Image (cartoon, rainbow, N blue to C red; front, side, top):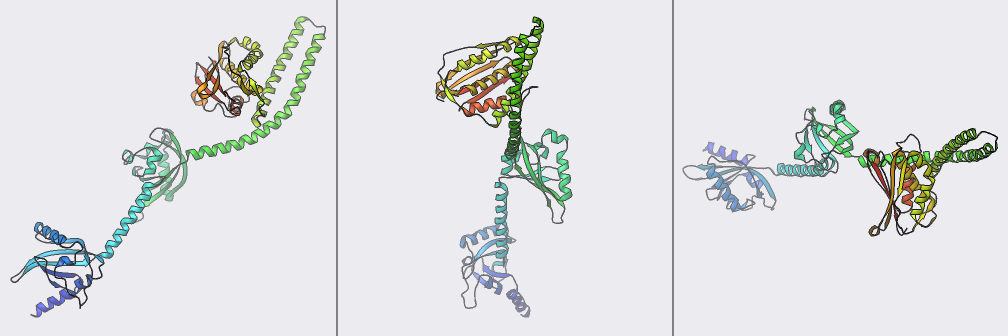
Length: 482
């Protein structure tokens, strides 16, 4: 009897809740801890059936009984919710064991309050989900990279930046993203070496290759990932695509440089123009003096030829100074209704001798055109620039065709200048309008830039198609109602 009382005393004061029920779930015993967990004070009536304290009620008790039929030795660590006296949900971890003796049979239910643990787990899950969403939905590319430079993490931002889905790169070497020239330099190895040395690599500017083969400029920050003992086992990398940012920065730098160059060019051009005018005037006077001298016909011809050569070079320098001045400040347009055929014919006449010398045949397919509102001198300059480029592309013995087309649907009149010269390489076409860009030994490098500006001032546009080795076609398109 003493032993039984001692055992009952242990059960009553143990730190684990204990409930005894019969096979029908009727409660026959609750210890003190069980009463504390479910909030039963001394004056409160003990529930009759165990499912009265289960959050899910009788269906859950029946579920437990079914589990015991499959596990006759009992159930360990089954987590569920019970209802306390003040109707709070309490998480408990229960173990259930069936028992039989001479006088009774039923279930022993042992349980402990794990509410705090479950709340912490829930917060941890919420935090993990929150961080996962931040990581996955970040606009920046976020990568996880092993010490062997293999990718183990790839977020949506990385998909946007690189064009690869996660399943296409997970487990692959980082080389899949590195351009060939940087692979040869073993850039991946150098980066990991630097990151291991410091534990991070911040704002590293380099190039990367997208899935579509496009090379992009990126800013990379790598940070070491450490285990509980502080050992580095990998790296996180945040990658930003700065391609457009770099282009804008380059344009700003170029704009500043061009502003300085433009001011210098304007000053130099103004200083040169007056001496050039004086030289031209004196050459004319010298030519008249030679005509009056008592010299042989052959000698006169030789001297006049030299003067004309000098005059031609002076005219060339004068054209360059005009280019520089136009680059700095485009003249105000003085528009009038003009037939483009008249401008082409005027240019043809002025270039007649040069065309004959170079054995270039200029064919003007003249058709009736409506007069359009343009600045005669500026339009003449734009067309002349293109024709001169065509002549230089041909060199000697070739053909230039000039023809027009009216596009009523677009309200445009386009003048086409087509040559059979050397053509323009594809990689140089996109640079053709850049100031000071030229592939020729002479010239200002401003001709096509100024032509482009003139067309813009007129509300028109310029289009160029070219095949290297076959020739170039330039279309100068003016608005019909301009």
